[in-house]
Length: 286
Image (tube, rainbow, N blue to C red):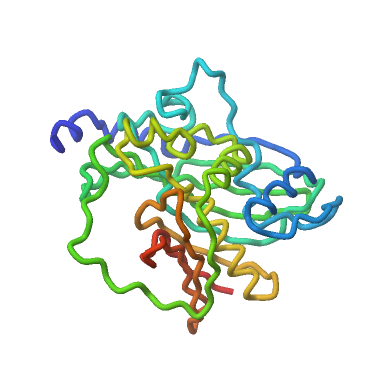
């Protein structure tokens, strides 16, 4: 099956998308900031012009909007356009890197300039994987606010990754916050990011079509919680650079934790499921 999947992946064709760019703009509104603060377990307050927004507010801004007729069976837009038309059905947010230069603030006119930087194919435990890397530059009238590398992964429908024979001991965290992966939390983040991916809100689809045991927690929501935790532990100052990658899915309906340990260079941070096993790991430096 892996060979058959590999045959329909024309890497030379997909790599023709490298260098493709697009731009989009949006305004940071007080209502958006209130909604995101609530979703990230922060004090909601009454944000006013000039107040700082959460550090990953850019993931809610200028999201692509397509008519219903242009959506695929998974709720994502049909393939092609800015992103290469990878002929694999599952698309997930694998990880990335963020550099913070300035806060986005209520009332800011923001612009995102995006560029495809790489397309590669690898073989993993779940079969053939296609990785697409995208660079985003977020600017405001004050200059650059965020530089980001976003890594997307596409793979065949197949089953989820096989379980390890014996999971390693859960890491011990010096700093930890416990939360609950509630379906309403997942719905709110999908709404804030205009994300139609059905794995986050359609239980019949995610269990019967994609074979997962429940609704899947958003990768960027985990990363957002990690970034905000890192900033909270440093007096509100975000890391200069934050690199992260997903390790395994986190599902609805149970407790999860946001964790951190201090290192000589900064912090190691991770989200973990109810069993304490990491689901996303990140490294922050100041």
